[in-house]
Amino acid sequence: MRIDSALKPRRLNDYNALKHKILLTNSKLSPFPLHVFILDGWLGLDMKPFSTEPVMLIEEVFPQDTNSYNTLFGGRLLSVMDKAAGIACSKFAHREFVTISIDTLTFKAPARQGDLIEVTGRVVFTSTHTAGVKVTACAMTKSDWETRVICEGYFFMVAIDSMMRPIPIPQLVPESEEGIQEWKKAEEIRENMLSKRNSE
Image 1 (tube, rainbow, N blue to C red):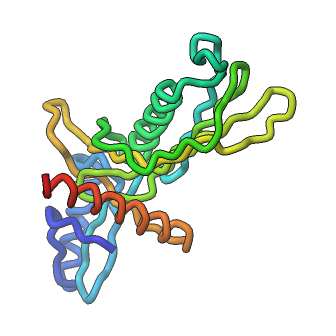
Image 2: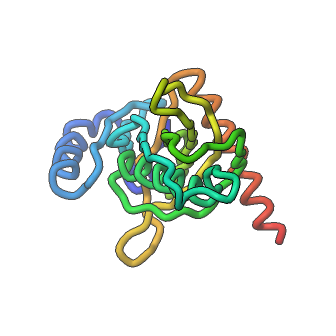
């Protein structure tokens, strides 16, 4: 559990006074739903995500989306995946986001003209200003609607204000074993990305 340093917790005997401040902040000052928690004898606040549900987009592959082999352009697929990642982040935090990196993007199979592309984005990792989204793209035909994975990747996005400055976001707390593993994988990818950037 994380403690937002901007909302310094009080000792438990200050609970009533802090409770009033929580209600006031939540109703007038904060765009986030606030969550009260107790950790090691301290009372604190945490910003809760608005939603942790995934975002799904479905688009059809048209002739202008394909190359001379009649398969979907990789760049076109990447554009849809990036869109899904951005919407998933906005749904999670109710913020504007910009993409800062795309990592471990793997093209597994082609999609062809006439196929439907189902792209799912889910926030699996957060830091102070950044959300990591796992995006999976599947292709299916209109005749059977059986999905096959064609691409997967991790998109990292930063929340910004109207002046393009990074701003804090709610923090994801993974609860399932799968969620914890996804968090660890995304965290490792981000740390590798940052270490490469710092070494340049």
